[in-house]
Image 1 (cartoon, rainbow, N blue to C red):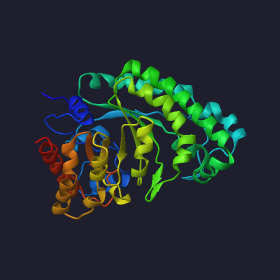
Image 2 (image 1 turned 90 degrees about the horizontal axis):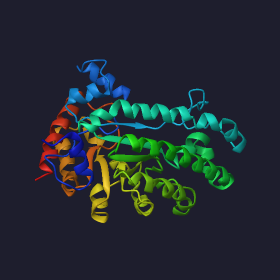
Image 3 (image 1 turned 135 degrees about the horizontal axis):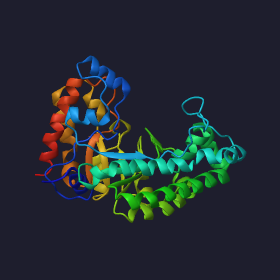
Image 4 (image 1 turned 30 degrees about the horizontal axis):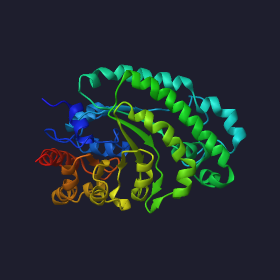
Length: 334
């Protein structure tokens, strides 16, 4: 019998199994989506793993390394920063990089690894990337100006992030051999990347080149999470050793069939247009599976909704989607 973990590994490596994994990749549904489904008859109070079981989805586990201490300042609003300059950064450095967070993440792995070792669940580990992390510190607007106004600070932040991430990764890989190691970036919007190739090569590439080879030592697939129209950045990421991307949002113009034609063994996750589930009916849900079926058959692909399932998707439609997902997950192996 094929285990959940074996099925997951096979898909990531272009190999066949009994079927593809059937998962909700973002792990936690929007709270408004859950509230609507409870109103429509779903039991209340279920945690993430209970929700997986309720819908019959395959389990997957993992963690996203949080670097900041509990007493690190929080931004005043979404998109705001917590520092403005080098002096602020130096003052908050030990709160921004809290060593206890590494210990907490390692303990989480210890607590969860037995299921992984038995094959019951795959495991993914995410660290912050070199666009995401300084933006979280500086805020959206100041971060974009900082490429010109404070380049030394950006380099300092990202080198410190490399050092912190590697300290964690070295210890984590002594405990577990995850299926994926990922960078959180969100470096694109719906028209393309938020920085030029030159800026990528100056401010991001040197830091990827320090971390990606270490990640690959355990055999995990190295992935990047970015919303938006990410396709123009694929060759940039291939150049630094990244092996795949997600969530591949259709609404932004991403076409996973086009990516597969250009990059036959590039890993992709998600890619199913979530907007199709917005009360468009069975024919539209099936039509979207037909659109992505060639990629499902091609390997190096684990399908799923292209980000979290949004409010407005009825419980009935989501259950229908999961049922079809299983059908197509098997069909893709034929």
